[in-house]
Length: 430
Ligand code: GDP
Ligand code: IMO
Ligand code: MG
Image (cartoon, rainbow, N blue to C red):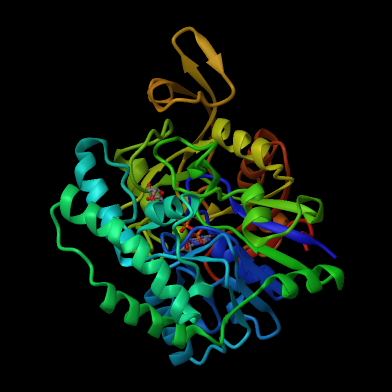
């Protein structure tokens, strides 16, 4: 039975939550493997509309076990808020497990994130301000606090005492802000641990047994691979590896178990925060893509910031496929293009006199490239009622086929609306 990674293949917000929500009822285990509450995954199904930040999008399926994996960084207050919200809406959260190895986002991480961004001034990254970068830095620096530590009074106190001394020096001496109290922080996080104790466990045996029993497993991505800390548009990236390698690492599954990597691509491109975006557009096309006023408008789920919008960038899209072994493509938000008379696809970059078919490594050079566009006719017909590939207007079929040809992977799914039944399964993916 398959183990499938569903990864964002652009700069995030591709509609991963929506795709995982559909595929969850065909799987038995969904593992969110990375990132933290910088993510915002909107799921619309018969139970309602939900905005998830940490919970895996398989939480709505009554037969699916959900795991927040070791590679995730968790803000316990946000997680508890999300659990309460779902429980108040009668969603059963008892099939959730949280890895003891997942790191905790502490209050000093959130403070550091915001203070660092302020200090960066004009060269800010545009982070979500959720403490993600500092939490991952501390994990790598081996001074992180893990979810399992919240369940052990003595360990928590010792680790917190050691790290807080240094953090308070940083907060007071470098940033001139008030220090955090060891006593209050300790008691607060001990209480979080108490409230989450039923969920926090060693998730390895659960995952290992699922693999042994050959049950279908989904690895749910957060962010997008162009935000990858190694392969993205550094330094305008997040602090984790959101792709297929990160899926294996964050879930604790060997790469040989992976049967397929589904790359989720919007039919155009969006980006939140700073950083180069070669196909970005302004004006009437941008207004059409933004869909302001619609429930799926291009406004950040987590921060409420307007997303930047642009044409599909096949140079970036193919690169994303190459570095992640994407073999299957899910195209989302095709319906957003319904009104456009012409649609552009960036098929190459012009840099001075040269043509590039891959992204340059530095943002300084990437900011100088000019997109080479190919134009395709629009369909100017509503697609949201389509349920089979054949129902789509020919021009829409041709557009999607061209995207997959440029990406170099087979077409799996097409989404033409936010509802669960608005996904066309072109070829079976699970
Ligand atoms: P994620 O972070 O990758 O899960 O994506 P987000 O949830 O942040 O953003 C995707 C937005 O588009 C959400 O509001 C979804 O409900 C919506 N959405 C997903 N697929 C489609 C689609 O095919 N058509 C439309 N109109 N909206 C969609
Ligand atoms: P989902 O899972 C879109 C972006 C931020 C910023 C950069 C670094 O919903 O696709 P961070 O707070 O991670 O240090 O910010 O990464 N970013 C996202 N953009 N969707 C996301 O998640 C994102 N998570 C982080 O906007 O540019
Ligand atoms: Mg999102």
